Every structure is written in C-alpha cells, then in structure tokens.
Image 1 (cartoon, one colour):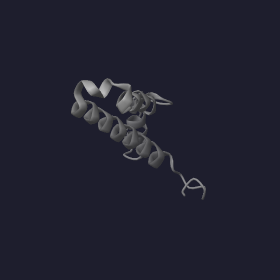
Image 2: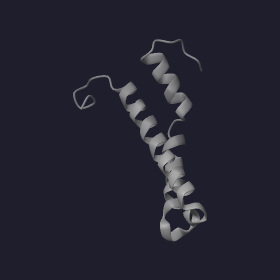
Image 3: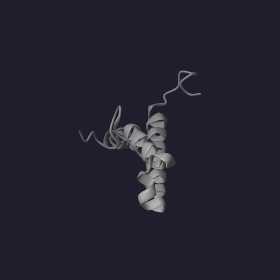
Length: 81
C-alpha cells in the first residue's frame, strides 16, 4: 500500500522480509526436529521446505544488512558497514 501511494516503505519491506524469512526457517527447523530422521525423507517435503527457506534468508541481501538498514533508517544509528 505504501509503495503504491509513493510513500517511503524501505524499512517496512526490510522488516517484513526479515521476519518472514526467520519465521519460515524456524518453522522448518522445528518440523525437522519433530520428525527426526523422517524429516529428511522426500515423501514428507520438510527437507525441500528447509532448502527453499534458505534462499529468502540470504538473497538478495543478508539478514545482517537488513538489520543495519533498519538501525540506520529507523533508529537513526550511524552506518555500520
């Protein structure tokens, strides 16, 4: 909505990407821990979800750069990179 109305949305978009990637990865890790060895079986798809959740965590920017952006733009901290 902010983007469509030409409002600044960089911090919101970065925060959403960070939270979604972390939540998805944590859910996959818990599923793997719950299923144990069966989590690696292709018939349960958990291993595929875990592999697919690695991509949003590292691409196109890393979680550390997202946090640096939020620290700089939202919190007003000095640039740390």
